[in-house]
Image 1 (tube, one colour):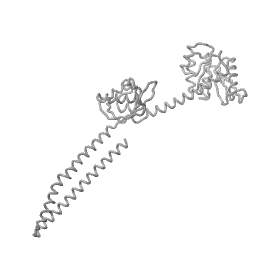
Image 2 (image 1 turned 30 degrees about the horizontal axis):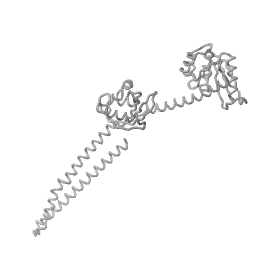
Image 3 (image 1 turned 60 degrees about the vertical axis):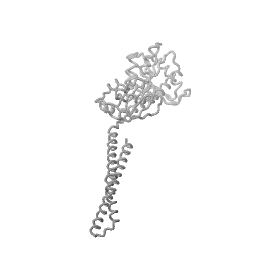
Length: 360
């Protein structure tokens, strides 16, 4: 059982902070701990204070009480670990718990190094007051909450990016180099992640598309709204595909970049072209039916009318004329029926094209 001094004071009259705080003080000097305790009690009403006298005890307590503390106050000269190694170990152990370094050494470069390693604040013991310590705790706690929320938000967006079933990437608007790509893009285009990150977006464009791409980039640079366009891309195997893209301007690792969603519409485009070709053939058939076939039919019907006007009395001839008239009428009805069905087929094809666009 490691040596811990636990002090719990609630609703102290002189204090100003109403919230409850659980604080771990890692300090081997009893006098310094007592001073820190007094300062904390001046400002915080509901305080649970835990004292660890060395790194080993602090490590054991942090392992047994994951995220139990609001803040850790750390002296960087402990019997079993000191300096940079101590800071690195404690920052890793604490995770989302802010670490405030308390030290008696006025070394500015060391203080800057400590902050770069992830500590929330660096305070000299000789400059410590109840108010400066209280402010550091409050600021560090709030800052850690904001940073944690941002990290969680970035994690969610990163998951949406990488788990998207459609190819997505981020590229630098100045250099045009890929900054990030998702798994769907790697699978669809055939390039490895390393290959993508060594390329610019020009490398996936055929030469004839470069000018159009440059025009689109000018729009992106001057207008940060969502931009949509249709382009030709080239896969690693040389296959050309038609893609619908949507893009938006973002800040990515300090750079002005564009995030792209690319949907391969090659198959849909080819299907639409095939439908259009079929429709053209149907139009040609319809024209033949309406003009070429109907023309001789019209002549037959005209001849029948002339013969009827000749007042032929022979009953047998009249019967033949009646058959000609009947056949001509039937042929006319058949042509009309074929033309009507052709029109319905064409309308159905157009309807399917519209549905394809809607689904796309």
